[in-house]
Image 1 (spheres, one colour):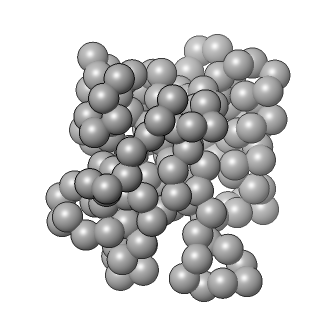
Image 2: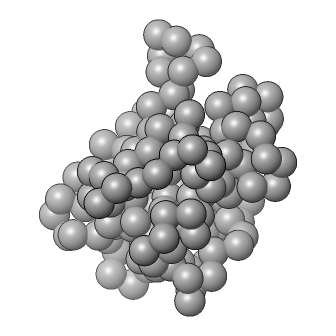
Amino acid sequence: MNDKKIKYIVIRVSNVDTHNVVEELDKVLAQRGHVWFGKYGRVIRGISTADQPDYRLVLVQRRISQAASYTAKTYRITGYSRLRPKDQAYPEYYKDVIQKIRTWVKIELAPQYEHVLTEDLVVISSASPLAFSLKNSMSSNFTCRLRDDRVILS
């Protein structure tokens, strides 16, 4: 797969509802082999079901000790829906907030060689480095591509 064609849907997350989002997703992922990430609020647009193998979900979370620093975890997107998943492969705490979820993204863990850092990505709509956009934008999600000098080797 040509890594320059891969689009990265980057979503800024926090420890909402007193849960660590990434840890809760990873628990279900370990049990089921996949998990549905539920995005609160504004619908994520631009994910084409025909192109899912070419999409990755990157969850970024601010490091508590460093205000301008983020951790990132990369997942492969294997499904997308606006409807609640029938298989209920999502974190238990979602049941209390299910009415807030407007977008469902089915994910699997990406192989280690596909994991990216925030410094590796550029926001497609603005051509700005993702790190700049995370610092200067209120948006919760961004569609990104790899920097021109960054290559993923399998």
